[in-house]
Length: 441
Image (cartoon, rainbow, N blue to C red):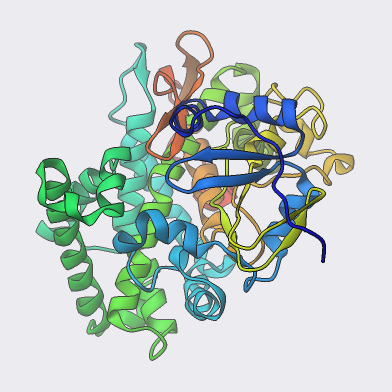
């Protein structure tokens, strides 16, 4: 094995690179790719030096590499380990990760997941009834409310009552975590001060309520008949997971699935409203709806980069022998928006996913390999159900110019919240009687 080395990268001070990476990731990383090639070095907090890879073949090598060599859990644990809990899939590596991942996959199997679709459609329809008519409003807050309800009713299966109401409030407040709250979890001394102290208190209450849900559900005589994610997890993982482990997995699902899905939905509608001629097709054609969801996730990736992996031994990537300890970050957003891989990459073109010849194109919004998001299929089906339910009830029109991406927490959101106007269909054209939600997805 030869000498290890790092690829080139910008010489800007660490704080400047940190600002550019967190505030303007799309422009910064795309500029680095253009100047330094598909493998380049960035120096930014909280990880320090990171090597970004923007070649699909190298990204696949990272995703499919030996989990004993590519440690993804360490990167997450560096920032959020104390928040996620010791059993969280996101913060574990190697055998521990695989052992906890297996039971977590069970509630998201296709046959089980199809049972959730009607409940999601009902939640979306209930939301639409409260939308302004004929005047501009931001969709993103409504998408957050939908995803919160999906979590409370479909994931947790919580019955109506005081606990469900409190869970809804706590989830909204706690999961609105910004960069400042994240810093408080990295440096525990801040937990004694002002906003970090309040966030810790709310999170502790949320954990207590989730633990109460886990214990009550485990003792529920009707557990065998319940179909929510928590009940399936408890029923099919009996003896494999402790109550604390189940609670940690719920926290992971909440953190990973709330803001991400809400933002993905906001972007999907932002893309769709720029092309009013395709809306009817999305209601009538399953394949076209799936293609539109796929295309919105390509064009507007929620994360411009996937969580870094720490190398436990030297690895050759992109022509460089990277030393042990290097943090390797897949820059999936750079790939998604590259003309090297997509014809007219800046355009929203769902039809590109309907052509068999385009099936080889790299599409990486949910990661890959043993670290691929366990809820990826659930998220895509949720998006399809919500989009179809909304478009059955009315037409959405973009209010203003196309929106740019801006950082919010750890995601990239529409700069004005996906501004639209909503125009309900007349009776008889779409509506409540249009058919089962199961067609969506």
